[in-house]
Figure 1 (spheres, each protein chain N blue to C red):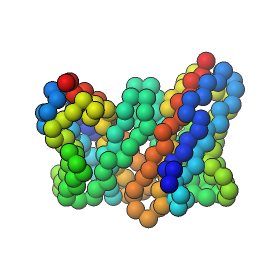
Figure 2: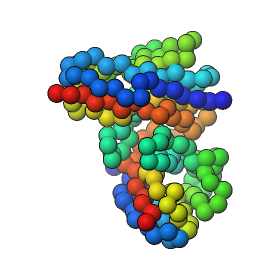
Figure 3: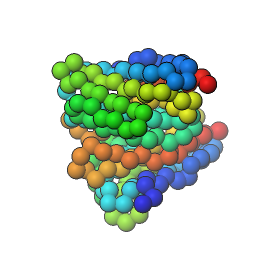
Figure 4: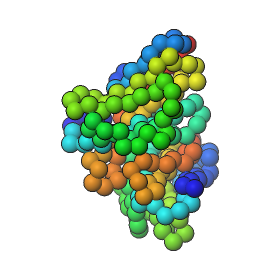
Length: 108
Length: 113
């Protein structure tokens, strides 16, 4: 069964802290996506990766294919990073299967 | 490049009415996907379309829901005889079908009263 699991479900941290959100998936994938959703807002694609590591500003995404695991890191977190972060996978086809999301709150 | 355009942003319908949600894909994209996000739940796949063809509708309820992506114009997700349980955010995404890169729209928030 194609499944995506995220942890933690909720995460509260102080401004400036280093943040890690984890994602694991059940079987081989074609691509792994990290998405961001602000309350009541649309969905923004942050990263798509199938191997290794990608960096964009303060955001870093890594994936370990052998362990079927990906992480999203935020360095020097800021209150504007508060959002829901969603991991999603393509299991060999075009449609995405989503994790349940991690609600991140950064306190000033 | 306006990205993926969804309208309306908010839609209120009474039980039994029809809801029509529109999605114009990003320029150059011919693949459209509809996803539903029920309150306090994760996103779920509904349907995948290419121009004039439904490729995968495995996530779409068998009754009352239909989708199309005509040769000209936006993709339409149609919900007939809406019920309160249809209240959700409906997101559209598009891609060029070459790799797995997607662009999402801002969503349509449907409220059934």
